[in-house]
Image (tube, rainbow, N blue to C red; front, side, top):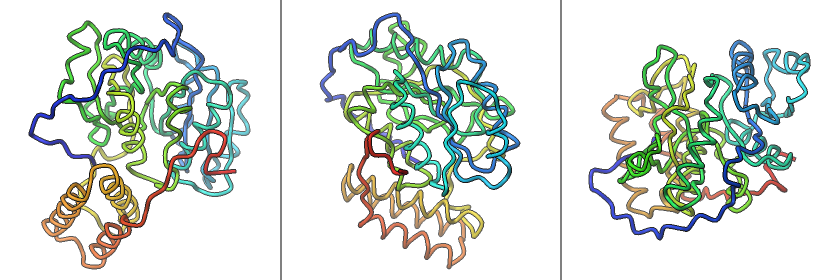
Length: 327
């Protein structure tokens, strides 16, 4: 998970002027992108919620990551003209699935892609609010906001611990200008709206990440080039993720180490290349310290340390919609 720092940074980024990339007053055509893997018990609820939006999606792209639980048969049985099902012959992970699905949505001609997991249940106006709030924020802030995310709740209505966006130092700026949104530097792929122009100019998520931190890398990439995104507080989704917990290296074990390995490698690589060697070393120290505090098993610690070291040579580059990871 990304860290927040106590010192208050200075906003030195030049504020770009609104370029009217999005026509005023128009919500545009949206391609929802849902990536799924062996969640047949939750996927139907996600699709029903997406198809019931107050602003209807033009397309609903479902990337089936080679599921083995009957997902293929279920999707093939649906009679829904908006549905675009992409069955993959291998599991590309969430990162590869989103890269491939977003490329497909873009190539369909969507003005926006709206991305989420297969256990995300958006409220009926979630998409419409994202569209309107992104537009209002762009007008108020005088630059085109590059992404907008929803407020993510757990199934009991509490805050979903895994899906907290990181706010900017001046997070209330849009809110104080009459927009019910806060400024964020990064978020997770649980209901995120991305404009077409951002994909055209900055490409797709890094499919090689496979799982974890692909969403943070991508939204941080957009923020770095264009300015802060927003969390639209009236756009609400429920994340039915089973256990409401964030990433904690004190709790890594044999059952989940494969996820932590990839997340560790991905975040360490990002820090080294985008924030510098000191950021990488501070992250390295934090991971080792947390595992020691949690008395993580020796074999598991060795695998995580190897992932930290592998990050030094792991440096995937963005691809664009004409050349996604899966051909």
